[in-house]
Every structure is written in structure tokens, then in C-alpha cells.
Amino acid sequence: GSVPLEKQGTLIDGSDLETGEDGGCSVLVDDNALMELCGGTSLRLERKDDKQEGVRVVRLDRGEIRLVVEPRLGLERIEIHTPAAIATILGTVVFVSVDEFRVTTITTGADSESVVSVTSNLPNVKGKTQLTGGQQIVIHPGEAPPPAAKLNRQAIARLGGCLVNFHSLSLDLDLRVHRGGKIEAVVNEEISTVSLAAVAAETTPDTVPQVDPPVDTDPPYTPTDVVDPDLIMELSRPGSGEPPCGSLPGKTC
Image (cartoon, rainbow, N blue to C red; front, side, top):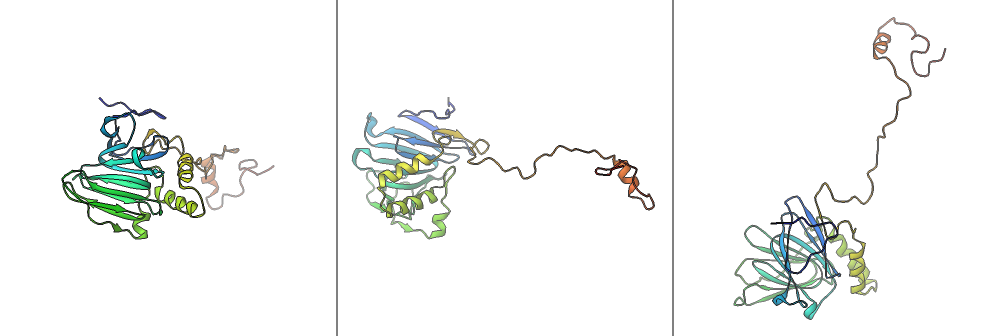
């Protein structure tokens, strides 16, 4: 049976992770990659060829994930396996979704460091497509990956995130790298700034932590004077005259 994920909990290789339709969580993968699961997502974390170390595999069966990860090569790389594709994440911000028909959509973040290499998940289906910043590919099961399409700014801006705004994170990352920051250090710092309450914690819309406390625009003031409502009605009639001494707040005798 399923076991609820504890806040700040730990997942081991071979773990299955599933979110409810209204849920979501963020998971820190291998200490230097942040993965966000949106609602209705099912995946498994494992190592390639069942080895204790090596290529990290995220087997996404359905739903939607977003990742920010420093560039990885060789045995340190991350692969996303779906029912239609294998996406090798070379860096840095990536969106992957699998719909009810097992169709896979892969999108790279707007930053210039985002690169993903995509192949079919079937060895006999040849072809490879490489995506760079701000591109998208839609691949159907059993088909070779088509050429990548360039997204316009409006489409990229709508990518957002469930708990973390990955589009804003991508833009900030790109700006800092262009200003001379080392990509590995910038990615790790971006990951570290994410609220720890959201990392590796199962959340729902009712339990997502607020960054700032809500502003109370109408505080409950304690009344200092009480006025008889029957008296107010009587005083509102024509010809009622002056209210009795001490009957209204501020009326002195």
C-alpha cells in the first residue's frame, strides 16, 4: 500500500512517488537538483541498470514535473524516462509532462544554459532532437522525436510552476550567469533559496507554506461603548428631540 511522504522525508532508489490531483511536492535529488511534482503525477526514482551509483533515472508515468539542475555529463547526468521518450537533462531548467494518452511534452527554460537531448524510448526507433533555451517538443509513443519548436515569450511565461515559479527562476539564473556567475554555483544557490518547507514535503493547496503572514486589513476592535438599538430607532423618528444625557457615546452631561 501507499505511505504518505513525511515532511523533510527521504526517498531511496526504487521509490515510487505519487501526488493527488490537488497535491504537489518538491524533492531535492542528489543534493543538487530540485524537482517539483504537480498534482496527479506518478513517478519512480532509480539508477540506470539498477546500479548503486551512476545515471539518475526519473521514470515519469503520468503527470508533470519541473527540474532545475546544474549541468551534468557522463554518469552524473539525469534522464527522464516516459512512455514515449528518454530526455537526457544537460542543464538547467526543464518541464516534462505526460498526458492521459501517454504523449510526452518536453520544454526547456528560457535561460541559455537549458539543454535537453531527446530520443524515443524504443531502441529500434532512431532519431535524436536537442532542445535549447525556450524550445518545446511533443512526442507520441512509438514515434521518433520531431524537430523542436521555438516558443514565444507568452507561451514560455505561462510555464510557471506549482510551488515554485520556474520561469522566473530560469530568467534570474540566466541573468546571473551573463553577469559572470558560474553556472554550477548559481544553480546551487537558486536551489538553496527555495523554502525548505516545500522541499521533500507533500503539500496541498491548504498546506502550502506562506512566505509572508496575511495582512489583517480589518482587525477586530473591542467596542468601548454599547448603544441600545431601540433607542437609536426612537431617536430617528421626527420630533424625537435631543437624546437623553449619557445615552450616546461621547455625550457628556
